Amino acid sequence: MDHQSVLSAYRRYAGVYDVLFGPLFEPGRRRLIAAMDCRPGETVLEAGVGTGLSLPHYPAHVGVVGIDLSPHMLERAHQRAQRMDLKNIDLRCMDVQQLDFPDDHFDKVACMYIASVVPDPEAMLAELKRVCRAGGDVFVLNHFSGSQGAVRRIEQSLSPLARRLGFRPLFPLDDFVALTDMELVAANPVNAFGYWTLVHLRNTAKNGKQTASGHALAETATPIADGHDRSEETAPAER
Image (cartoon, rainbow, N blue to C red; front, side, top):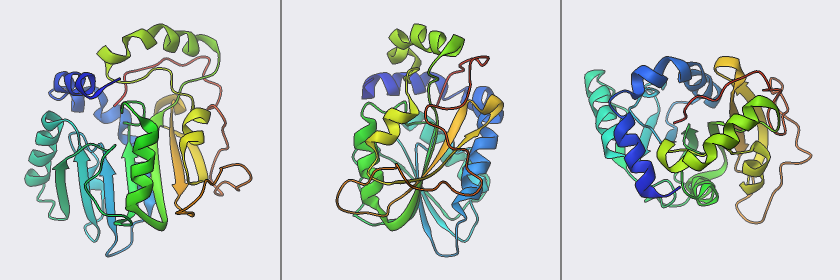
């Protein structure tokens, strides 16, 4: 994966993204924003805002900065925000791997459907941690690959097409969590068939590595290592 392949893929997707993936990914968007429990006056970063499908779900009492690498996707987000008169939204074209924000700038961070898209997920996580205040929360919603069965074989067969597809079909949850320098609070399956996972991370330590092992999951969380049993599911495209 590289920037050019991502830009090329989402230039193709921009015009049809809402139709193809709007309803399919909508439960996850709503679930993530509800889990954020945004309070009045808080500031939120949404990395990978895409066409802005999530924007109407944020409460008006929080300031939301949405960023995306694709100007084609972002233009549609601008149109949506203007059409719906969303005055609390600030949209910017920016690379999540190199954010133009100071340290500790946001109370909460949302990252929807881009973790397996960015060329360097570790760099992305480091930047999300840097701009999130100490004690703040980072929510990542993404497809994570299965460990066995038919779905795993499909993901393996699609892996050589990653540049064309614009995402990595092989993207294990364990590997992703190992890249984080934050506390794992919860990991829950969402969307159709529970094929995607909502990961809740807490920025409890600004210095030094903190592992996820040993931390209790939230009361409603479903603990998963590499996902649940996905042997009967199929792998749709991702954004």
